[in-house]
Image 1 (cartoon, rainbow, N blue to C red):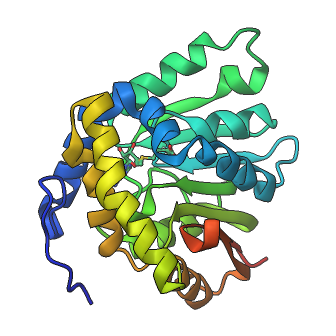
Image 2: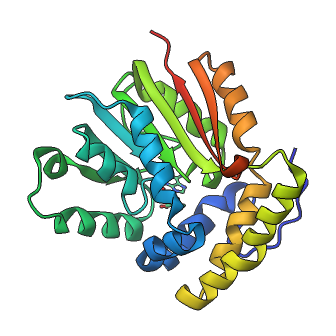
Image 3: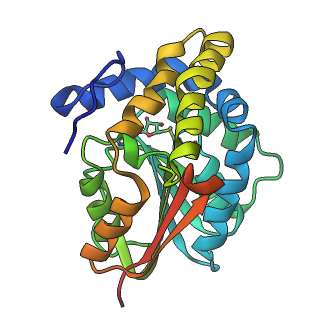
Length: 249
Ligand SMILES: C[S@@+](CC[C@H](N)C(=O)[O-])C[C@H]1O[C@@H](n2cnc3c(N)ncnc32)[C@H](O)[C@@H]1O
């Protein structure tokens, strides 16, 4: 049930949601990586490494990273040896990702083969049973329907594939939750203002999180979809979370 009041120019419920989210990421694409480091104190790099470890990349694996943005996870999966596709609906974010790929010295075969493509995570342009690994980093919360996003992840995953979601979480400890939400409400928009001239884009994180049921509901949905070995890995006391599951054989 969605009860939170909407108070952000980039958050719109329903039909308008995707267009607003697209505007948001177009407006911050050039500064996205810097701001990610600043607002998470660089910790997102460690959390993304955890995602890649969980993906257990084997040579020849096919990986899909949804809502790939500027390409952190897709590049990391490709570096591990997976033949990887990063998909996002924001052309501006994809441009940054592609520039990053091209700037990598001594391109390995996997980095050369890494493709960034434009598409909607809720309507994937792939047949079922296509990928050994499907990841999404800080993307599910932005979808009009996060449930549809998960269903699509499952559809395109091969039997035994790893499905991994990294996302902002909701700490169960109410004092910690209050401190963390205050950080998202005050410091993060201030960082957005100072380094990007765009406080609203960063205030959107808290607004979207209020409308997103977070790690426990994602785990419940994964179980409902009959994924195996469903796990929630709480990071920073649940302020971030990784949801993990495997497509049944
Ligand atoms: C917060 S960024 C995350 C980027 C990257 N995965 C990371 O971890 O840094 C969210 C990304 O989701 C993308 N996105 C949002 N809704 C989408 C959709 N329906 N289909 C594809 N991409 C979407 C945005 O364009 C944006 O690049």
